[in-house]
Length: 83
Image 1 (tube, helix red, strand yellow):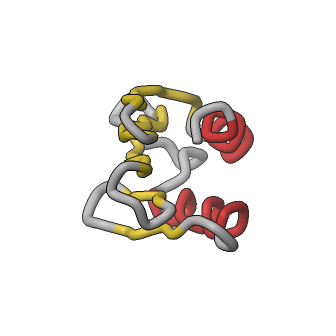
Image 2: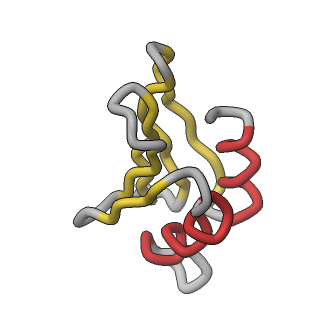
């Protein structure tokens, strides 16, 4: 990854700042999970080798599988149309 590409802890900080009142983030080895506590509503987020952010999960039966640029603005915009 380039020096300008965020790492997973940067992404966690963005999500904690934006969603901490009603969603939880859990950091794992190479990805993190954003959830409202329900097994039916979660998004797993990781930074890919090609410096994108991949989102994969489920929202009450609807599958989530999206990619966006590895920037705070792009991630939050993608999430706002997803969750």
